[in-house]
Image 1 (spheres, one colour):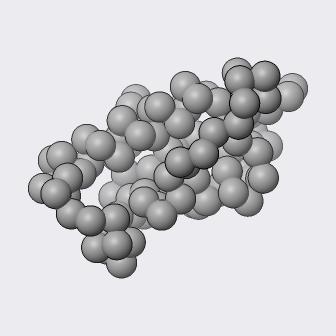
Image 2 (cartoon, one colour; image 1 turned 60 degrees about the vertical axis):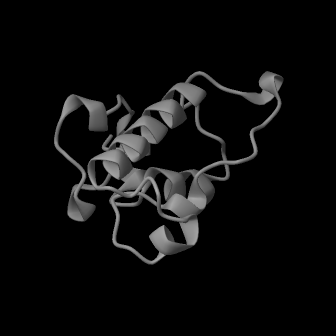
Length: 102
């Protein structure tokens, strides 16, 4: 599964890929990972969110966006949805290790 959609500038490299079952990969389609999380109404594993946040930070750092306000970034065409970055997390007993229950 691709974390940052290629259509929005996501790279085709190992940092932008995670293992996912066919069903999850298909349901995500070309959505942003955080859009997909909202669509599924299920908080993703922290390891995946960590990878997504690392890609987000690296993209912003490489493109001189770290000093921008979130409001400025919302209207920019980016490979991620800054407005959907999680700020609230479920309690530890509700966190999961895998996306799929298979």
